[in-house]
Length: 417
Ligand code: AMP
Image (cartoon, rainbow, N blue to C red; front, side, top):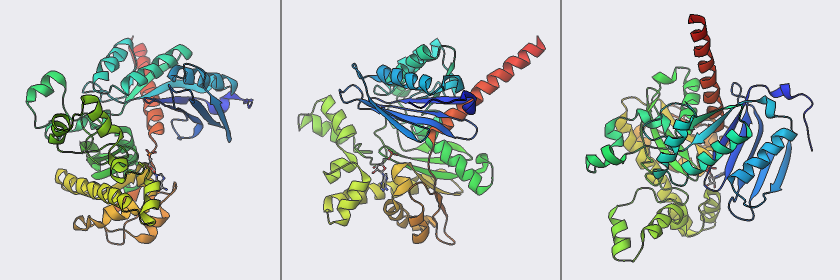
């Protein structure tokens, strides 16, 4: 096994942990440069084919996990490898992606007992994610007791939304007493690509007005006014908005009553239907994977074509409707696995937005794939960028910024004392 002769090669790196319901993604990142030192994924957790894959120093290490095949087992293996690669002393802090921060957290937050309790109580809003995030936090506290842990909330960027965007047309008490409102997700990704677009525009983010489309297995559109999120398509839960890989996106709420009252569905059936069996998968009856559907469509599969057509129409509809939040628009951003790679989806979306002066250049659109970013707008059309997202880098950067500013505050306090 590979070991590093000099651990100082990678000083002050941040370990980024993203615990999902059945996976753990992790990376060790230099917060200033975004350099990824080590990265990997543990997947199929809680099943006996659970496996962890680690990439380090141009080598790939795969290992089957031992029982109980859970998040803790995965993190134990990661810690073992970090020791073997001599990387533990390179880690200056751990940054955790936490899905739901409710209304309480709009900034990166140092994890204390109080914050852990808050994440736990917010699990009622994100039952699949927040408990998994907490497992990651506890496992890292055990493994790296000497390191500070920071929570970066996926909802945080959207806390700037005005009431008109986040209140549903429901009795207001549901919001006041039970927190029923739009929170939005993918905040870290929308923030990252907006910052990149600001650099391309050569002006501060606070002067940028953008619409950002994160299109992956989960999808969302966010409208950004003067650098801040003012509306987003995901709601109180990640089911609302665009059609996604397996999630329905917007449906008439009356359909749920029909499913229950007329077709005998129970609550769990409905939850599964809307989250796991709908979207691209549900309509195509083939796959949730955009690549598979594009191939099938090209060989004449009408159901795949229908799924992709609805997918693109919904995206265009959301972008057009979100223009109501802006008086100026610097451009549109495509990101996420589909946004970064599918020239077909991008073209179909943009051709439905000619009223907003969007128009795509075929040549530039074809070139901006597989990690290549760029402006794909035709001459004289409104900007339209493909920008690869990098949520891990944001988490590393924000974790590091929080540590640096708390260090500075402590130094100032000491000087005053
Ligand atoms: P993500 O959740 O961001 O990892 O994105 C996953 C989605 O990106 C899946 O639907 C993939 O099919 C899609 N995707 C990845 N590469 C391509 C590609 N070359 N063309 C079309 N879709 C792609």
